[in-house]
Length: 612
Image (cartoon, rainbow, N blue to C red; front, side, top):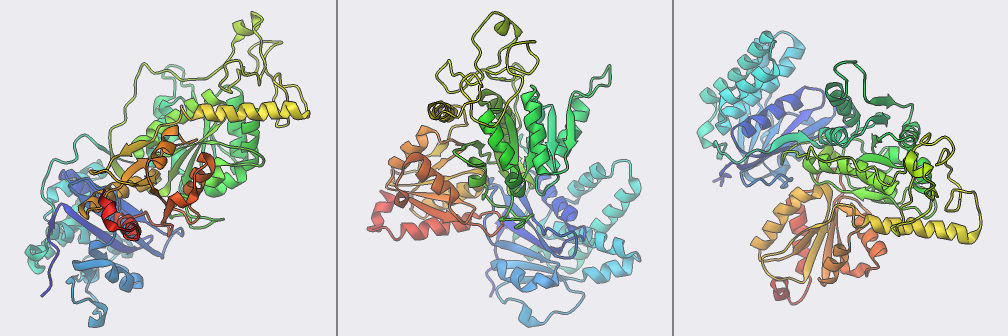
């Protein structure tokens, strides 16, 4: 007798489709319909880098408790791709459900005895109804959404409302989609045992005022609100939608209504090297410029990044990380660009990194990065990844103080120069390592007009004298120390009981980590947690590590890059930092984190000390 999974508003549905079949829109429709019923969802599109024909998956986490990370496993698999059937069936938790197209018979050996199998002849239904091949494919997706609506008790009026919003003014498309929806729902109600499916959606009021948006769109908005007026970029997955959305918002917000003048510039460069060069040039001349790219683009930009660091020119880079090395996995997520960004370029070079955890912080940190770049006169990286950038997610509404003004940093104006105030382009008069700068043309004879990437003294005079070079490099190091108090500070979470164990994590790992910490406590294992949000590391990071005997460092890359940086930058014993690594290109799951930490905690003796 199958012990069926029974759950209201707490389950995972995974769709296995063929890329290019139009399934992503239908699967998102399913997710949004649950959200409209007041139940939090977190969908993830796991897609291939080619255009058509390869396997693709779409996972919908439904959680009334607002766990927005991947859990691991699934409770129902909607198996629409014969190529991946065996792996897809294997992924379903015992007692779960398998929904599939039963038009063609499948050998019994391909099923599992511990699953409830729900077959529906989808291909036969669309072949009997539609003659056009493309219509058959597209409406097949809508028909199975209709069937799922019946199985999960999703109100069809909610889906109809989503259709009406999507096809406003396109009544023919609206009517045809509504027809396909009800075709699937009616079939399921008449032919499938809907009452015996234990996964149900019940109306709730758990979404609140949160918004549903992806990280790339949020980052683009952050750049608009942060005052960016120049974007230079070269298309690369998964960051291309940031400049595209920046352009969209600027067309609404950055065109003078009286003159029609565009108060912004967007340039698609011939390559990544050109794009960062344009950003540096624009910032040198007083603009607020940024670029959006991914790991391979960073690789190409490193020479110019060294110039910006040593000449001390602001630059903001939004890096939406993907799987590497080289071309790697263009449509998979990782956190593997920490080294390449933190130490980009030759010589002793260090850059500022910001680590947002969701679209809300993508908005906040993109705006903040523009201020930080100006304040510190250096490149600043916003380290998104594909999981944040390209997946829609619930987050807190964006907030902005209308009284806030851009922080342009230490800039001397005409009056400062005319008054005879001492100006040395690389002169530190405040003790924080940050010199004053001028915009070219501020004064006809005074200030800075040119810059270079070679050594110089405090007054920008060329010099290769050892003491002069050391003086400049030590000032740059001091400036990096100043940045520790300017980057977003870490956020901690204490366990329910005192513990000698801690965990450090960052970025898109956060949603799964929240659930894992709860699960560990339910198992009687207590771990304090600290989410790092910026590099250089705030002093509280060292305090946290020193307060614990062992600290797990959870990250999504092979080489434990964050762990290495913590050890190197903070002078810590690497043996104290235990790596927990996930890097297969899929977003990390709560089950993976829980298992990895619990198995290591079990190695410490006596085990009773874990809870102490």
